[in-house]
Image (tube, rainbow, N blue to C red; front, side, top):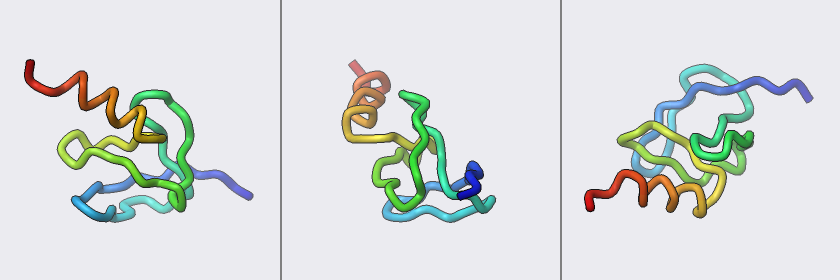
Length: 65
């Protein structure tokens, strides 16, 4: 299988594919996420996360104290 990084526009409950590909990179861990497995992202930051652990870590970093 040919791997190609996709470029996405993240929306509240979906995402738009801007550039075709089959994976994106987790903003926290740097791990590849197949689009078919992409579940976690942040609309405001336009970032993807590999799992709820990375998503929660980012939330903790950006939430007001």
